[in-house]
Structures are given as C-alpha cells and as structure tokens.
Image (cartoon, rainbow over all chains, first blue to last red; front, top):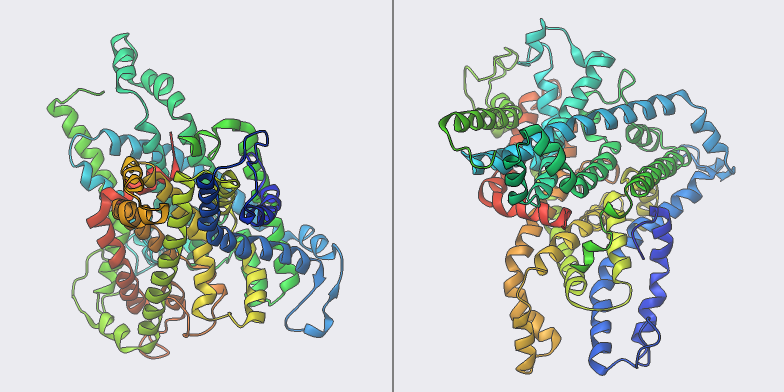
Length: 331
Length: 278
C-alpha cells in the first residue's frame, strides 16, 4: 500500500492485513508477485519471521486505534448519557445535527483553527531560524542544541504552569510588566498566551526536523552559488529551500496535525474559559464533565474526519514528497 | 556563509546563541525559582527568590498524593517504554532486513497512527476500558501509550538499523547461525545504542502525556504526576498550592533535563533520523 491514502482508507487496509498473516503460515504460499518460481525454503522462513516479528506491533496499533474509532462511530449514533443510562437509544445522525448547529462547537473549531494556523506559521519561521543557528553556529553548538531540546522534552503541563504563573498578576514576572492586568482572564490575551506557550514548546521540534533537511543541502552547491554572486537570501531561497522542500513538508504536516490536537496548554492556562476551548477541550468536557458519551463520541468522529481531511489535502498537494512515500522504506 | 570565521561572525552567532538559550531556559528557571520561594515571597513578582526554602519539596514528598503519582508515572512510563521498544525493535528489524508481504502496509499504518488525533480515542477508550475493567488502572494507560509510541519506535529504530553493517550478519549465518541467532548474537549488540536512544524518546513521550492520563484515570491508583498537579491543594485544603505544584513540576522535569544534558547528541540524531529520511 502506498501511503497516499487517507487515514480512514488505511485503517480499512489495516484490517485487510490479517488474512495476509494467515496465508503466510501456509508453506506452499507463493510470492505475491505471482509469476515467480516457488519460494525457496530460506525465503519462506524469512517471510514467516518477518510477519511474526511485525505481528505484535501491528496488532496492538490496530486494536487500540481502529476498533475504538469504529466503536466511536457506533456510539455517536446513539443518545447515550451516563447520567441517564436508561435513556440510551439509537438516534441516527441526531448527535451530528446537535453538534454541528451548536455555537460552542464552531467557536472551539475556530479557536483550534486559529491556534493551528498561527502557531504553525510562526514555528516554521522561528524553526527555520533555529535550525540554521543549530546547523551553522560557530560557537557553542552543543549548548544551543541542548538548550533547544529542553522545551521539546519538558512535560507540557509543567511548561503551561510556568506560563500561567508568569502571567498571574502579583506572582508573575511577566504580568507585572503590563501593570498588573490579568491577561489570562481576557479572551484575546489568553489566546495569545496559549499560542506563545505552544510555540515555545514545539519550535525546537520543528527546528530539528528542518535541520535534518538542512543537512542534505550540498555544501558545494552553496559555495558555487556564492561564487556566482548569489546573496545570502538568494542562496537561502534558490538553493536551500528547494532541497529542503520534503523536510519542510514533513515538518508542516506533523506540526499541523499536532497543533490541531492542542489540549494540555489550554487545560492548564485557561481551562477553556472565555471561549478559549479547543475542539479537544470541548470533547473532553462533554465526556468527563458532562458524561455524555454520545455527544463526546460525535465530536471524536468529527475531529478524526477533520484530521483525515487535513492529512489528505497535504498529501494531495505535495504528492510524492509526503512522508513514507517510496524513498522512505527503500533506501 | 560557510567559511566566514571572522570575529564579527563569531560574535553575531554568539549573540544568536544567547538569545536561543535564554528563550529556552527562562520558563524552566522561573518555575524552579517559584519552587524555592517561601510562601511570603511567592507573590512578590520577582524572577529570583529573595528567600530560599526547601519547604515546598518537603511538603510534596510528605504527601501520599505526590509520591503515589510519581510511582505511577515512573512505573507506567517504564513498562510502556520497555514493551514499545521491544515490539518496535522486532518490527523495525523485519522492516529494515526482511522481505515479506505487508511491509509497506505496516510502515503506512504506523505513519497514520503518528498523525492520529488522540482525542478521538478518548470517548471510545473511556467506555471500552470501563467495560473491561481497565479504567483507572496501569494497563489502561500503558496500552494507549504503547500504541502511540510504536510509530516513533518503529521509525527511529528502522533508521538506526539501516546503518548497521549487515555483512556481519551474513558472516554469522555463513558460520552456521540461524537468522534468529544472528539477530541475537551479532545484531542486537550493534543495535544497542539505537535502541537506547529510542527508549529515551519513547520514555519522554509517555512521561509527557496528559490527555489519556486525565481521561482514563479517576483516582490516585493510576494518576500520573501531570494529572495529579491539577488536584494539588497544598498542605491544607485552604493553602495556596502554587509552591507545591512548582516543586512537583521541577521534580518531574529533572529526568528530562538529565536526558537532554547527557544524551543531547543521541536525541537529536534519533529525532532527525526517524522523522526524515532523505
């Protein structure tokens, strides 16, 4: 299977994998490519070992994701509130109508989209800068890389608390710069702080992915461009960017999907107050605070579909440059 | 750009370095600083403590709440890491070495899981785990952690495995070792550094999780530290828990800092090799 498929498509494909495993255990099984001679004893042993080694990982991944997401589709078609378990019944698409006509949902969706777009855009620029610094710096390369890894590694909740206290009037060193106003109690400033926290935490990861692409830029090419009179900016846009394109796309795809899941920072910083909930926060609130499995599952499914669409668009737009396309495994 | 080594260039890079280091460290230093402040100076808004105290640390280690959560965090992360790395290593070995049907499919599925919106699993897993009796237990968290750590493990490990000199394996087989023996005796020791790096990355991932931990637990039995922080109340119900939260936050940051300090190079190579293959 090529990876040029939506998650949903691949999920279906994933389930089709099981029969494969069973066939391979049959000794007479021939190569999938058909026209070849019967497999040698060695070759068959190799295939069997390969499948055996992969089976546990594949099984866990499919069981813990494919089954629940299907179950979630089933739950989303029911009225199912744990506070009123007796009223559980099949209601078709009613939950979807409820959610999609609900202002909270669309507000949360807008917030999530805004956070995703702004943070990913800023991170791309800052991450590129950081990648260049980490790649090129003449002094203290180790120190810079070590420092940059700290935001990546630190527990998001810990960082979120740090930002929360920094902006708490009285306590915080940052809040006091703005004459003791309480930025986390207003919508615009809260969103800005959430984005700041996200950007701080994930820029290093973006930078590391970009740095991997930067390492692929041939030094000779840069020198040649330099000799031909290209300015630093021209070398960057005309030489480095084209070579780095695949790495940039991978970084963008991963960060976009990751940013769309924003939850921890919002939970700690505002707890979703002042209309700062993301879709993840909303789904969480409906499930754990509202105990409404039907609506919670509906949101789960909608988020899943949105993410699938984002991934699909990325892969369609960028085609073979997408991660996991052939060069990935063949090298 | 490549060959300027003038003093001016050095200074310029040096300044950029300083900006990066300061930006990266300030939030960490701030929460550490708060954790050392006395209750009286906690709200003075100063970046550094005027009076230093270890009371906050004493408080949290005296309460069952934090110690229990710490044990949960460590236990769950270690078990999940071990299992994910073992399963991931098996799969990565097969992917990088063996020819078998369904290989591309496996790579594709892991990629999709890496992009999977975890919040979509929250509602169904909540219900499934309640029915299976896994809700609010260690396995209830370990299972999703393994699942979402596996793609990371498989990608990183297969990138590492591809760099191993496999001729040695051939030599071992020539000397009569089976494929399995060749794996155990020859390749495993060579692969150890890659496996170790992967283990660090997976551990960081599990250690970090908040979403699953807050939805799939309900008591101290399996609550991990990031979740327990939300329920901190300080020494008494009415005390401001800020100091205690900061101290606990610092405690769970220490292992991360140690990893980063000692294994910076490995972590960077692990992250970059696993994510982008050129």
